[in-house]
Image 1 (cartoon, one colour):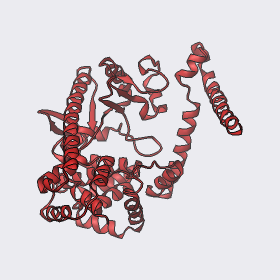
Image 2 (tube, one colour):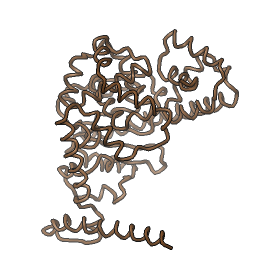
Image 3 (cartoon, rainbow, N blue to C red):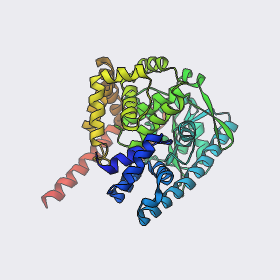
Image 4 (cartoon, rainbow, N blue to C red):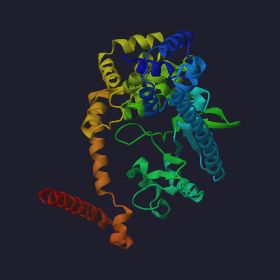
Length: 406
């Protein structure tokens, strides 16, 4: 392992135990590509922890330009973290005032829950869960705060869909940004796309909500056990391409190891069909960041050869392909390998194809703008949309072919 990689792994934690602190002190004295280390910390979004831990160890041993760069980036992150925290509390207040139950997760709430400090976890957006039937009203309220929809087709406030149509929209459709670009809000009702994992819009999750203190205010969020499962699903969705997502799992284990009912966590993950994703996240947190996974569960992870192969592949590419995006085929193969059973893999394929077909066939505002129809003829949009897409992409293919022959 390169010294830069080892140092980053040692420092990518909110609290360094004494043996790790001594190892960091020794690594700092070795020849080090500090610029490579800094780039990796930025890519993996763990720079606040790197700087904080180096400052505790021996920050003066770093070259002055590197030290200044780390300090400046850390200060910018502190300011941005506080800004997003205040912004989230403001939006939650607006939603609460209008009778909409909202649950924030990830972002500043996870930083407070697992890291104990909103400035140690790097985040750039706010994730807020609402019930599916409330998502359009929540959308209108967020737009009224000056945010703009990032949906490429049209502004969501002009949408005449009812909440049942939400099922046909990808989660990213309900993403909003401030005009100045300083804050993005993801309004959600599920962890990720329907074909990949489970919905968050379940009464059992809402009944187990926990409370965390954030900037002097009590905020509801998912219980630690549910948060842990969600984090492992989220990391698996992104093929664990950033060290930050492993850090999230490791910090949750550190903070709540004795409070979590681990057997119940496994039962819930099994019920949701994401047990292998949970085990993969825990194995990575244990092997990369020394997370103290309970002994019995650790033995189970050690004996699961498929999980170990998946984890080995992730470790091999973690610092090599950090800047490369995964191709669709590679992602799908990885997703299939994270499924617990063949039945789950078959369901994944069916749902994936189904969602692709929904994306193709479900009319958008583009079709309505091009071909205004009365309500009683609106079913014709389901035939018009695929025809429009065929024409659009055929035209693009022809133009590329034409340019290639010139």
